[in-house]
Length: 395
Image 1 (cartoon, helix red, strand yellow):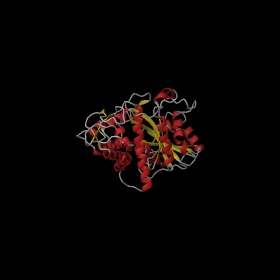
Image 2: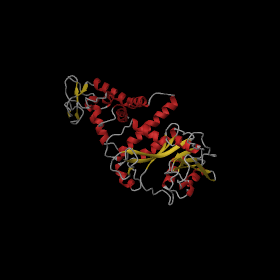
Image 3: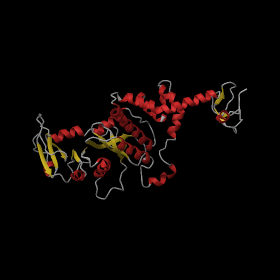
Image 4: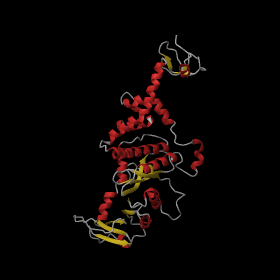
């Protein structure tokens, strides 16, 4: 926990530059220095693992995410159990920026950071809480033949939240008529833009020429409506909705229908969440993709913790202050243990030396153990075993 607290302190105090700079004389952060030495932190980073390396080779054959899949699954379960989302949810993609060598690293030209690991996310619209998330690992052998990737993703992410009368908002990658029917069977409505390459779209929706600017056309298929709106010349926007019983035209100059207005309001859940996570991110340079995923998980967990803390306590402070309080709480138990250890060392008359480990010069209870602690009186190097056993008394 103390290790994670350092990551959060760095995220709010010195997010730019190498993480080891936090211990330098120029950028010294006392909260970090008091927690643990730089070399100890680097050692933890070097040995940070999230699974059993001995069995990883076998598990990777069926799970590309094996290096961190266990902890990611538990993170998802805790997110779903700790919060009940509201009536409206949003599903979209997130690209966590990293250039580590990884079999599922993505390149998306339209993103600010073009390289990274892609995650599908479902968030609560009002709070931006992460309800569920899933990494994109390429071809999924568990997906049924003929099922579209987008439909598979939406149904998996929404599975814990179906059958409760919610609405889910998606972009044109996910939205389709077949998906809206599947969701309606689970008492869930759909709102989203539709890609014009969909075969199910009528020709009327694909034709943009000779359409009057700010005009609206509405088509229906059962309880699902398709709104075709022309925001400018030679351009149309198609919005599919099973949420709206009636499509009404606004009174403004652009005469926007309520389906367009509602979509513009509900589409931003994941984007705002990603912006919040990037503002105070623990992300740092790494060559291991599992560590990059771990950084993203900490960022998302910190956002969720902030939302839950506000909901439970009514707290109205800024997230920067909350992250600082969180870091202090995470290091609290470690610092208490550290203080107890220092008291024991003082009671035993031993203080840390200033040199590297040296062979115990007492050897009353040990077999040439090495230590960097010296007796406060005679300055002899003493190991923990000789001090704890109490057989030796400084003369």
